Each structure stands twice: as structure tokens, then as C-alpha cells.
Amino acid sequence: MKATVKAHTNIALIKYWGKRDEALFLPTNNSLSVTLDKFYTITTVEFLPALQADEFYFNGELAEEKELMKISAFLDRVRANAKKPMFACVKSQNHVPTAAGFASSASGYAALAAASAKAIGLQLTDRELSQLARQGSGSASRSIFGGYVEWEKGSNADGSDCYAQQILKKDAWDLRILSVEVTTKAKKVLSREGMKRTVQTSPFFAGWLEAVEQDLIAIKEAINERDFTKLGQVVEANALKMHATTLGANPPFMYWQSATVEVMQEVQALREKGIEAYFTIDAGPNVKIVCQPEEEQVIHESLETLPVVQQIHHCRIGPGITYL
Ligand code: DP6
Image (tube, rainbow, N blue to C red):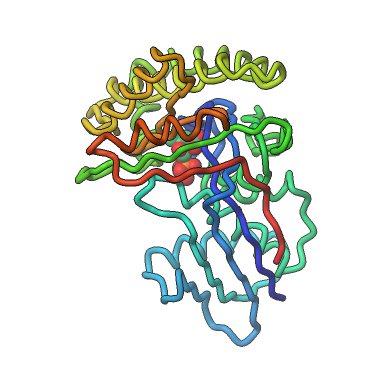
């Protein structure tokens, strides 16, 4: 009753921003991501009859009570599903630079879902695993798969038609992602809280939902045609629209720092010089740049000159979950 799984983080090219059901993690819109090769979580789950409660070790240390409670709540779903009321020991090793602003919850819950399901003897398809992972963190549903992944919002109230699926294999189109870490002292509004506040209070949220439909159509065309310019334009515009909704929330909030804007402007300046770089930004101040392999180095060199840039991580498109 033991299993170990490796799962990678992902970056959304079309953002998941808004839930229609918070308990089931049902989103208001489809999203589309690429899985990244560089950052991942390895999790071992072992169900043991002798345990009186769940145990959770994170990066080699006993995790805080608050973290253990989240893991236990997730395992409760797995236990209920398998009808086996047994506690587990969970050991997670994160290879995600938390400061880089990559959602470690995506790789974390994808690995936990797959390892716990396997360990307890549930035979789930990858689609079913994406539905399970989703209930730990929405973006985790996409990390079950490698390559280019779309998370279908579905329309059923029980979430039965809400799952992620691969739409293109990772080797079918070699894009590169640069994760640009900037200096920041900001306190952040977590994505969960930020999207909730936006849905409830931002008058711009209706505009977001309308625009995201068009962006999804355009990005799928760009992917089918391997049209990088079109893809980049949609990616950057979609991120800007997501962030615009936060300015209309009550109270308003903003994930960008001045350093974020400096990097965004540098990316736009590169394009004026004919170098094709496009940015995207999640619920934090760091910037991810999407580019083609032949321009990766020149983009790195230009960003490196900015004093606000602390570190640049180079990622390729990565695989889905693997059982170790
Ligand atoms: C801005 O998946 O972290 O990164 O479902 O509440 O756990 P919860 O949220 P989470 O949100 C990710 C938001 C985003 C966009 C994206 O990854 O699609």
C-alpha cells in the first residue's frame, strides 16, 4: 500500500481565473497550459494499518499542523472513494523554487493524487486522476499530463465532465519558458483568495469570461498552425486581461511590482527589435517569458542586464506524472 509519484508544475497560457463551485473546484472557464520539465514534486504515500492519524513530511521535515490538515482533507476523499478508512504517511520533496512564483500546489496535488490513489488500490484513469487532483488545487488537474494541456470546465454540477486532457504532445512543438525572478518585498494575495474576490466583486469579471472564450479559440488555432506570433500575442493579452480584473475588485489588488513592469517593458522592447518574446504572469510578481529555442539565449542576455532581475530559470515543455 505504498506508491511514489513525480509530477511537474505547469504554466497557464490561458488562465484559470474564477470558480463556479468552490467546494468542488469547478472553474468558470477552460484553461490551457504547458507542463514544465524543470520543476517538480516527488511524493510517497504509504497507508499503514498501525497509524492513528495521517503524517506529513515536507522536504524532510514534519510539516505544520495547517499543512497536515489540508493533506488529510484530501486523503479523506481518497479513503471515501476506496472505502478504506486507513491513515497514511506522506513524504513530499519539492523541487520547485517557491520564490520563482511557480504554483507548487499544481505539482504537489498532482503527485499526491496519483500516489495516494495507487497506494490505496484505486485504479483511476489519468482523466479521473485529473479530477481528483483538481480537488486539491485547480491547476493541479493539468499537471497530470505532459505537453500542452486543456482543462475543460464542464457544465455538470457534480464535476463529472470537468477534467484536463492533453491536446498536444510535448515534442510536437518545442517552445521554451524563461521564469524571471524579480526582487520583491510584497505580501501576496493568494490565488485562491484573489480569484474569489474577483468573481464576487469585480465588474470586469464578466468581460474576462467573454474574452477568454475568444482567446481559447485563437490559441488552439495558433497551436494547430504552430504559429508562434499568434500564440505569443494571445498568451500575453490573456494574462493582461486576467490581471485587469483584479484592479476592479473590492478591495482592489494588484500582483505586479515595479520590477514586474520593468520586465514586461523589456519584453516589449525586445519585440520592437524583432525578437519574439511574450510574457505571462500568475498570481505573483514574477514574469514567465514564452519564446522559441533560437531566441532563448539573446532574451536571457538582455534580461540579465536589468538590476531587478534576480534569477532566470530555463524550462522546456515537460512530461506528465510518472510512477517511480
Ligand atoms: C493565476 O490552482 O493555485 O496561476 O484552485 O484555488 O488552488 P486553487 O488555485 P490555483 O490557481 C492558479 C491561478 C493562476 C492561473 C492558472 O494557473 O491557470
